Length: 180
Image (cartoon, rainbow, N blue to C red; front, side, top):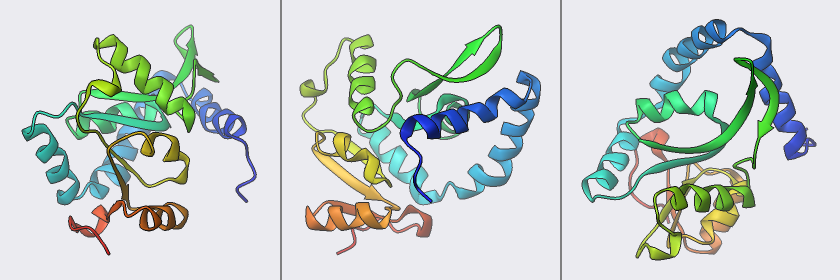
C-alpha cells in the first residue's frame, strides 16, 4: 500500500536477512543473481557503464538497497565502488538493523560525501557528475549532479524528469537514446 516509513521498510527488508545462516544466505543470493539479476542486465546497461569507464569516470553504485544484495551486483557489473545501506552484523549474523546512515534520500548525499572523503575528494571538485535513477526518492542526489538521468523511471520520476528536461533512458529495451 506504500504506507511504510523508510525505517519500517528497512526493518522489514533487513529482517529477512536474520532468517538464514551466512551459508544459506549466500546460496539464496547466488540463485537470485542467476535467475533474476544477471538476465535483467541488458547489453545497453553494460555499454553505458563501459562508456563511462572508457572516459576515465569514477563509477560507483549508490543505492538504498542493502549491500548484502547489491555487492554481488556491483561485482557482476565490474563496478569497484558501492555506496549502499549497510546491514548491521553481530557475531557473524545479520541483526535486521541498519548500521549507520541509510543510503536513502538525503542520506545518499551524506554517504556519497563520506565515501568521496575516503578518496580525498569532494563532489564539488568534479567538472561533471552523472546520476542514473529510477526512483523519486533519489531527487536529493539528482538535484546536485550536473547530469541527472531518469533510467527506467517510475511514473513520478518520469514526470519530474520531463518537467526539468532531464535525459530519460530505458535500459530494459536497450534504448540508449533520450526520449522526448
